[in-house]
Length: 103
Image (cartoon, rainbow, N blue to C red; front, side, top):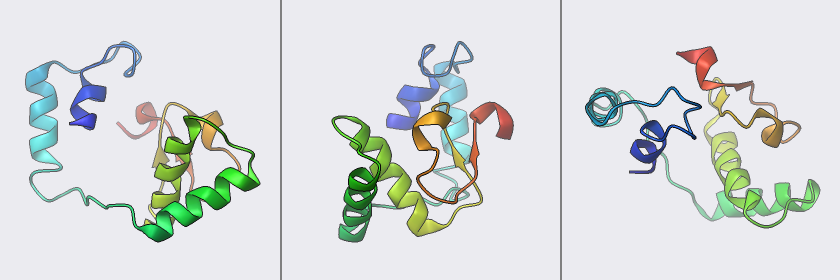
């Protein structure tokens, strides 16, 4: 549901948001079809997030971004996609790309 919220939000998608039918189709073709791997945080994810937050002096709500990145580190993806590239620099060695770079 968070993905749907983002995909259909003009601000989050920087003016390139999807209509409800487009968002539904994308989610059905990726997540629901099994082509997209969904992973869930573990205790190790939380430990890594806290370690990164401490090391990088992260506070407040940024911990949620750090937890996502910690989860990505455990999965070793090809790249990490976000419009907030600056918030994720120097956290690890996963290449950072904006959504525009991968679409």
